[in-house]
Image (cartoon, rainbow, N blue to C red; front, side, top):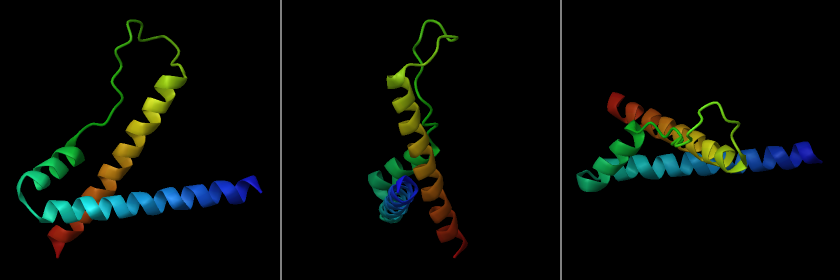
Length: 90
């Protein structure tokens, strides 16, 4: 049962990422400030900001969530860039 639930959640998240990427690409097509924001989002590193004094310290749960958020933003930016690249080829 857990595998089915995991697959359902994963499928829904992938669908949401695709829809968001399409929306961002559509915003880019409008030009102006919104397009500038989309281009900056796509170009951004999205790496978690590590302000720890001890870089060798073990990350806590809050850092793990921050890292997951950063990874999701990177994947969204990559999907948006893929759509923008496809638009440029057309």
